[in-house]
Image (cartoon, rainbow, N blue to C red; front, side):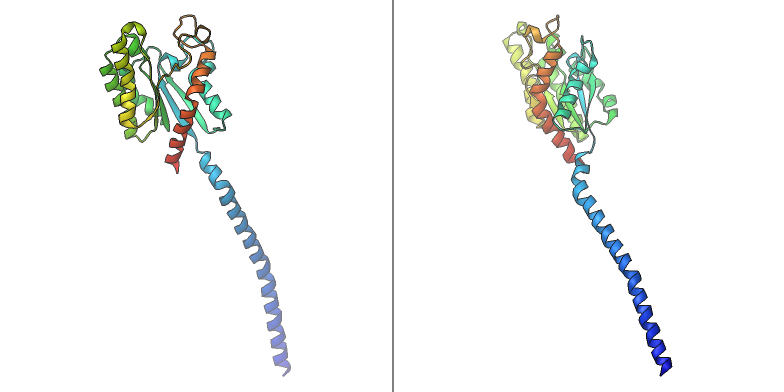
Length: 241
């Protein structure tokens, strides 16, 4: 009898000890799970939003910042600052502008320009085609090649159009502006009809040559294209989801 009472007491002690050991473990596991869940719930969307987005500003002197004393006043740099001011802290705008470049030059250098692996492209080529009176059919074909190549890489595009100098005549001006609009409509890319909207022919917004924007003119360009650039960013972010 005594033997049975001792065995029962030992069994009860062991059971109590086991329960005492399990309680802290269970409590710690519960806390850990709650912590992990909180991280997933509250940090998940932010992590997605924080994916870095690289925008390639692919253009000519209007993109490169020709004539400006400080490259930080060029279109890509001003656009990046404007985007960050709107809360797009994860966006970098790469300056891929070459002064004097045409749409033909843009076709030729596209492959090595894509080595930076951009998430989106602002295509702002064609101004020099107009200055050189290039056949609008050639400009259109080149723009189509560039956009098609970018679409093959699943890269969202925002195309900035241009207006021809008035001395080239009404017919040329219509066909020239139409080249940008036609490619944009065919391919479905975002389209900003006139890159220099609000800046051209306004002396105080341009440099002494009357052709290239001053920093204040660049700011007007940025303000005009900013809403579409935010749509471009949304398209780029959608690829990461």
